[in-house]
Image (cartoon, rainbow, N blue to C red):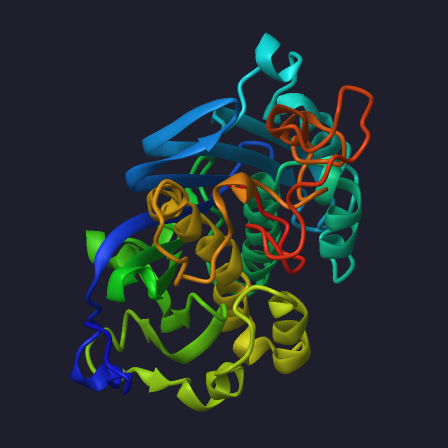
Length: 379
């Protein structure tokens, strides 16, 4: 059951409730054969129970998204030379029911980012050219993390290269993994989310004598939060970080980040969260990893909300009042223009009858729907 007082991590990183969803993101940075660096990213969404009426059909539990992005960058100029998305599992497969459209139709917009430099302005360019109705929100989330991870790996590798032999072709340089888990509590009144990020930098093979020598540096972040599902605000949130290296594998303690996260209690866990996080953390490199984790909170929460669709369906088929404060069954889906499929007048809206074949608005998802509040996500 939910506890009004969030236990400090010193007493154990634990959470109770019914597991509803797991989102996994990972980015691996390798040494390419031609001197470039290759970054491979993957996003997986595992729905653990229930179903969601979407895509013109029922989206069952199991893997609902499996998407990848591969990128090659020149480490000297930091120019992104190639970026290639792959989407084996998507929510909307091309079919006559949705007019032959698919989540894959906008992949070329991501490829068009080749030639851009991985600098402070890259995230804005990515959002402008692939965000909202121009792209896929899940690939956008993954590419944002890939770009941030790759920039950090380039910085770390520049230091390593000063005192180490060259990396071997195909050698893994760095890996980041971020896992978001959602747990339904109090019959859906609250949602607990855990986020755990693990960054590992390797030692070049030329300096390795034993397997453990490959371990050079690890940075970990973990966050635990409870969300009031009626108000969609943070009921509480805490987090901590630690850094270890080969010489100090045992000993480094977790450092609390509760004070840094405390100002978000009572604030929306969806609407405007990204802007609030950017303003709160700024450009401080000391908190970049924690910021990267928190920027994935709202997208992860959206996926957990979709996994609760069975409760919305049940309410819609009964005479019981809706005590969850969530969307109705007709509002299940993406906010208008949250992605290409859910663009205004697109197949997402047409299949629910929110617009007619000519694109006229018939009244559908809007304020209060899944994805409300400027979170560019679809279920």
